[in-house]
Length: 274
Image 1 (cartoon, rainbow, N blue to C red):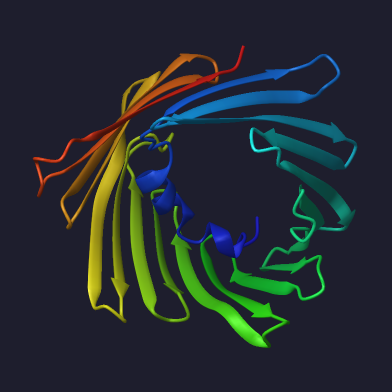
Image 2 (image 1 turned 30 degrees about the vertical axis):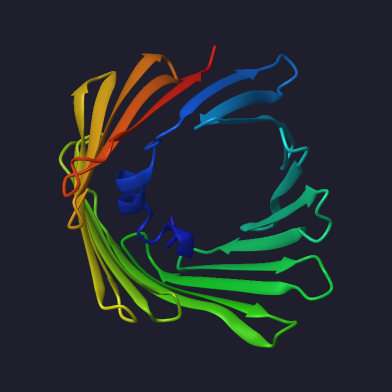
C-alpha cells in the first residue's frame, strides 16, 4: 500500500508503449511440475541467428530460487528471500562464468517510503540506491549510482508520479539531468484493457524532442490490440489473442511512415502454458 519502487514511476506508460512488441520469431512453453517447480523454455530466431534458454523456478517457504541456462552456456541464478525482516526483501544474483557479476539487493517497504540498495560482489563494486516517499496516489523518488573504483557517480535520476483509478501521470529526470520524460495514461474501462497513453521526451544536449502517442483496445475478452506513433514517423501495432488460459499468440509490425520504401518489420510470438 506504499508508494512503490522508484522503478515503477512511469512504468505503466512504458509498458503500454513497448511491452509485447517484438520483431523476431519467439516461442515459449511454460509448465508446472508436481513437485512445484515452474519450468519454461524459450527459443528466439532473429534474422539468421537462433538463441534459446531454459529456466526453472522453485519456491520453498520464504525463498524463491530462479535458474536460467542459455545457449551461450551462461547460467543466471537469482535467490529471493522474502520477509527476512519485517517488510524487507533480499535478492542475490550471479551469472556464471562471469564471476564478477554477483550482486545483492535489499528492498524495504513502508506505508510511506520504499528504500532499495544494491551492491556488486566484486573488488570495486558499483553501489545503487533508490528512495521513494509518498503514498499509493502520489510518490516522489530518486536514484543514484556510485562507482567505488572511479570514485564518481554513475547516475542520478529523480521522478514524481500521480496515480488515480482512472489515470497515471509521471515526470522523470534521467541521464544525469540530460533527459526529461513526461507521460500520461488514461484508462477507459474498469479492467484497464482499453487505455490511451502519451509520452514526451526531451534530450537537452541535442535539443531533440520525441513525442509518442498510443494505447490499447480490447476487441473482445480474448483479443486486444496495441498501437503507437511518434513524431519521427515510426508507426507500430500488435494484436494479442489468448488461445486458452495464459497462452498467447502475438503478432507485431512496425514501419516508417516517412520512408515507405523501407521494408516494414514483423514479429511473431507464441507463449504456451499447458
